[in-house]
Amino acid sequence: MFGERIDVARGFTDNLADQGELRGLIGPLELPRLWSRHVLNSALLAPLMQGSVADIGSGGGLPGLVLAIARPDVHFTLVEPMERRTDWLSEQVQSLGLENVDVRRARAEDLGVSRSFDVVTARAVGALSKLIPITAPLVRPGGELVLLKGAAVDQEVAKAAKVISRHRLSDPRVEVLGDGTPIESTRVFRARVD
Image (cartoon, rainbow, N blue to C red; front, side, top):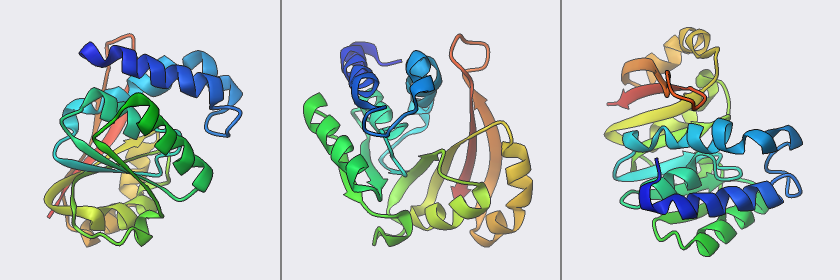
């Protein structure tokens, strides 16, 4: 999944394992499954990334830093409101030598850019009914939302039907990535922004 950049991915994962719990980025139960549940799970999105991408609520760098490692040809803007997390993200960008990443300390709705990104992604940020209104305005016309979701995503889609319509999302769908592989599968809500 990372090709010749596997050592960079290992470096990030080692850093997260070493400092993540101490810095409040991951819980103690996540350490044994950092690769399977978090890193590789995030990397499954790499083929869906293009152009300029905003990762909303980047936290410890999942999926943003993982995707930036896997896709050096794509530019990523990591958006995170908490200073301690943006400090971590900036440290990782520098120590890993990632030239395709900007870190912005902001909330998505306060980012000050509109209709700017080809793709906007988020992981573990909130329900679709709350997430779409803060992410869709960031996507350029014809761009795409690619939002990592949990097992209840189908119920979230049903509850967000009016929000999906209001934000002029076309072809909304749920895809399961990684099914049939040793990697924990990832559910993704995808929709084009018109």
